[in-house]
Image (cartoon, rainbow, N blue to C red):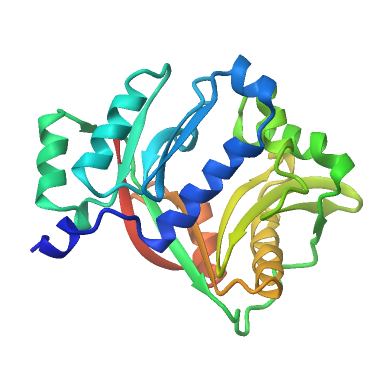
Length: 268
């Protein structure tokens, strides 16, 4: 059943653009932050392993985009020398029998809900603009504000603000504010490479939530990407579960994104 996938060790295009974005996030991050926060990342056969122990999020402490036992062994050994929480994200449905056996031999246990990968193809069609919220690009001198808002929205320590500030104005990255009048109230980022783009960094300040901020930021990023030649947009969010609605997932579906596959989280 899994003979095709047992031969594939490179990631799907949807995972590859996500891994590339995080490798580049590390590349553009300030040297002082890498040293002080032990921020490290390694590219492995189109996927990556990333470690930022002071970040509470799985997204900055995980292995993703790997499909062979050899690559997983390399990432597992690398992550084993890191501090903090560490995770493996994997689409088990398409994993080879060898990889499934590897997970069992390592005694890896699933951790919480998995992540859903969603995609949207250009053109955008007849989607209506979500309300009257204005959005605009983040200017270079506003990078500290962008970074601080990202930390506040995701409940990250402000010591990591320079991580998010560092992507503003960098090649491949496009950063946006949603506005209340002239005041930034929400953030969104896009990393584009070729015809694929990854959407991330979408957050709204707590006091401005439930005002379609994220829908507006999704729309402006996809429109901006199409103007750059992007034909496929990818994003991920927590898998919806019974009795626990996922507003992010619902917003993405309303904005035309389709569910592609799920990845489970395993604790390393």
